[in-house]
Length: 565
Image 1: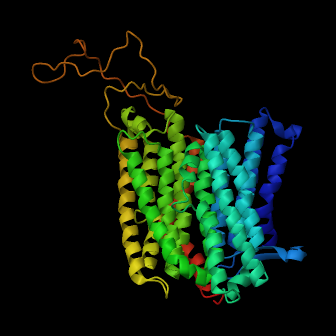
Image 2: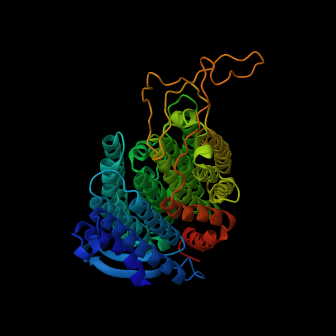
């Protein structure tokens, strides 16, 4: 178990180095680019298998106990140790990270993103995976910070080199926000380490803040919380996220939403709740207030983007929806109760599955139409997705209703448990205030349903716009938008009616026969392979939530009790 956990963390890093080296002659094949993409699939697949074996070997009867632990002295002068371990809180996040990265590598093998050499792309994805897995596995505060920062440079280059329009500005905004937040977070980590005499996260959690004064805890929570809030992202520190998602390639958006955002909320649960409980209790009402503002703000932004004529980008809309969904996670954490924190952890995993699937689907729609503009998708598509690519349209509708929290799917349980936690917060927190936050959050679920249903209606069903100048894309999914019509091309106009009120015959002046709506390529084999696991797990988590809650609940109970089972 120790070897497996170390392998899971280190193997992607070694794979990234190997991806940059020249491939052996026997492995190059006919296409060197495909060889390195195949290498990415192999490495991420091996990591996923190792993570599954780790989960199978995990002692599910004692999920609150740190397992597969490693403790090696690294910098004795600072008492920094290489400490690894997993419990019921970190194991689901390890599995989610390994799964999403493998699916991204599999998707990229058949559809490489347009940009520079695939070698650098594969290496960056593997470094990103290694940093994320390390974040969820390390048990030393300084190592946590290093792993937390390790993912920034790969994501910056994925956006800046493989992204779409405005990618340079979006990449710079991402890196500046996250780096500035990380500087403040480092100061808080050093304060805890110097005042307590250790960076051991397990020892600090067991101490439960007894070795830190209230003032030190308040300062530490403020400093560390700012860095974590940027990565989450929490309103009003969220403004880098929509730009980053809009510019990022499909794989970058999936990893950013499905994995990187979870690092911030994991830090709140793993570090601040058990190590500085008094400081968290001081800031919990403010954290909850920011959380519910984010829920409403994200939903209203999505409604504004979804309305007709807004020229809203579908990727940007899904990004703003993440601000709202992560608001529920922060609200659950702010309650400081087992119910709320379990709801936050469940919502974390559900958001990774559902939003990862949504970004895959939006990327596929953009590839087929050449745009993610909602007005174009709704107004110039004739029969839209249901009529042109029915399987793709059905899966997009499924992901949308899962995102709005339909009972029986994964998105429901996290939001429900979070609201239950807010109804009865931890001792010392204002019950009237948190019940107000609960009511605002519940209203946010209605807004979420509103904009998601609008998106499904417009994108999947379309809107009738007979005067659109946009020609339908060809079978390869290329967009022929704004192409000037030939001089002799018949125009689609509302011709005169016949005497009986029916349409004129096709030869009458000003009319033409109805054109057959061209079909789009429906879900391809490689897309089905990448998307099916996410859809299946969304259903499984919705119908059988005890699988996840059985892991997290004992660990959360112990965490909130100061290391006592």
